[in-house]
Image (cartoon, rainbow, N blue to C red; front, top):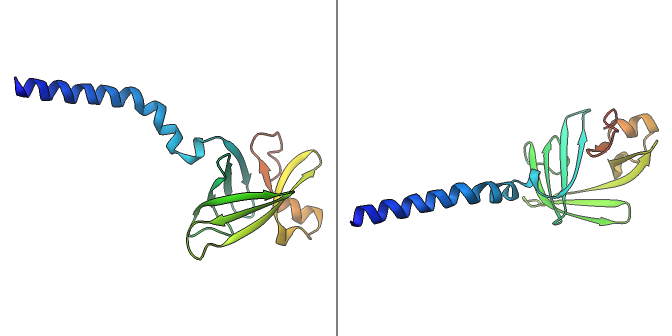
Length: 135
């Protein structure tokens, strides 16, 4: 009797996990959370997601990355977006958001003084636009 009760309890818990897991797991993956995605193809592939929660995740070659991945907090001040890495030494990078020929782009402020061609080459294109030839 005791073995049957234990087996039934384990079966109920597993069934509950199978039902609940698909609802919970996407919220654990920051790449699936609500926010805005940005990408850059050159000079190195880079993906950035600014989450609605004020967090960010990044993958690729980036100014605040330890290795190839980074996460932290982001904040906006006008057209400037600042990323602050969670990992010591808590590096930060400032990006400017601007419109180039109808395409929303992000570029690190240190590149913002470049000529148009160089600026666009270093820029990140927003994922939800048709501007995939840029960034």
